Image (tube, rainbow, N blue to C red; front, side, top):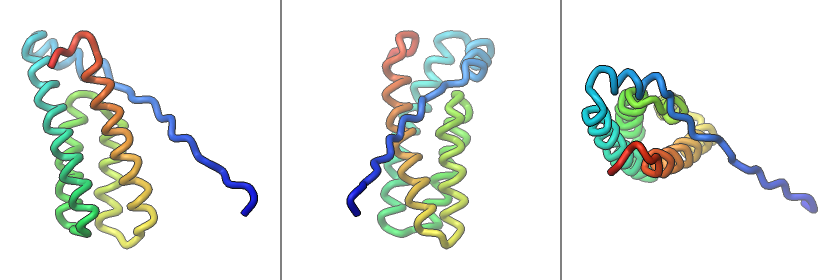
Length: 126
C-alpha cells in the first residue's frame, strides 16, 4: 500500500437553460424566480431527508424521498442531480450497499454544489 490514489470529484454543475427559459416564458421573470427559489428550498430539505434516511437505513423512505427529488430538480433544469437521485432510488430498491454509498455521495456532492451555484447566480435572488 505504498501508492494511494486520491480521486478528485470535479463534476460541473449544469443548469439546463431551456428549462429555465420555459419557466420564464410560462410564468414571467418573477414567477420563474419564485418557482426556482421554492425548488431550491425544497431541494435542500429533500437532500437532508435523503441523507437522514440513508444513515437510518430506511430504504423505503430513501426511495420515496429520492423519487420526490427528481421532479423538483428536473423542473428547474438540474439534470445531473436528477440522474443521481434516480440512481439512489434504484439502489435503495437493491442490495448493493457499495453502489448505494457511491451514488449517495454523488447526490449529496452534486446537490450541495447545485445549491451554491444557483444561489450565486446573479439573476436568481433569494
